[in-house]
Image 1: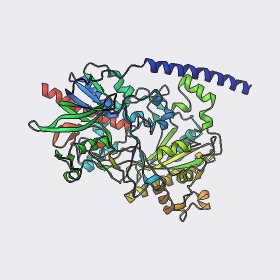
Image 2: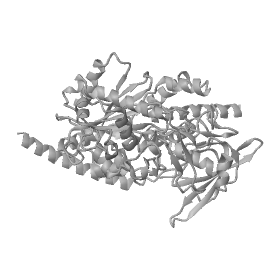
Image 3: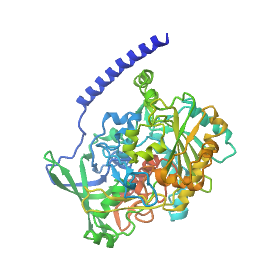
Image 4: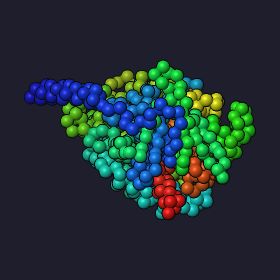
Length: 593
């Protein structure tokens, strides 16, 4: 009977799969081009609001301005459209290094990344409508009030406390009408986390099941929530596949952005240059790497750094590109002795899983596999622990997007060759890292990548914080709540760390030395892809996100974050864009009243 049922499910899954593929092909053939594209037969245009970058902030801003102003809005994006497959959650990893990824690499890291090729971290960033919100792992985070209160207290930003930000965070969340939350009963791992919450009730730790920006089994990002509903508005024009190369400043009577130079390549791959005049405001939403790159390439930054590249100075602003921050993770593989089920090739290829996804958007294809989080916000060294329910880790896929050396990857994931392996990855991180890096230029040309140095683990406190996170993760994994999973932590056997461990007792007691843990994190730790701070509030922009000295330019993206968000930052960026839109609209109302 069981074999007969499997055959029926397999046939049903194949039929639904064929229908779905046919449907997607038809949709692709019938798909309209991006509407409202700015015709470029003319080389000069004048627009009220020019938005650079169609990611989380740019899409949110464009939507709100188009709805609430009669002014003209131009949204410029370096990429085009993401493909339909980008909406299938489990395929997220396979988008990285593709045509919709800028595929940046960090500078060789001095204090970390020793197990990575050339000690360089992969830094994926979305390229296309929706930006990194169409490339990320879709995780939603409600926000942590003390993060914003610290901006007020430590950066003299009196109107950036949680009191002011909470309404916008709530608005950003309410826009996501159908968030998907991992059920308690989703898997043995989610059930263990639920039991651990009760067991560790005496700890001031916050347990939360993962919440995704997913609707009906498909990615539901700012593109679907904000941008698509307004794409055909009469006061909106889009300019896809276009790169902003320079901002031109002029005194009128105060210093302001008068125009931007945009490069668009034609069918012969020859670049056409457009001059777009700014009537009211220029809104930079190009992200924590490319917003400072554009400012510096335009001669807005520290004068001596610009002089080295023979870039004419337009505006001296010393801290452009400084203060870059990101979360830093140490993943550890934990095998389990029961059937999870967890993500592995056997699970993904099962007919039942395929049937569930194609028929109802559920199952392993319907999320990215991150089932929950534990945060110690109130600990002396605030930490975060993420549980990723992946048993078999595909070597070719993960090595490519992480830049691991083969021997380091295999030390971290020793069961890489077992397609049916059950297990999970526990990811430890510091929620408020102290290390700061930079974004700078190697070339004047905006078509060349910026020089990005995250400077991970340069502050020793980040090492201590990550170590505390690891030891707390061990307490969870070895607790009674997890005992039925029969977990085994696989401490990486790295040749470079062999003097410090792991020793046989470490696999029994799970208490390796501090020297070993530091060595491991400096070899195989990875960035979280949460960059921010490179044009921070109070340093580069004022409390209303206006560029110091250039009041008609605002920066609205993660580069303005003076300190990290204690979780996934995407919702916070949408909230900041909502707040920026409120200021812009108030200014317009004042000017026309």
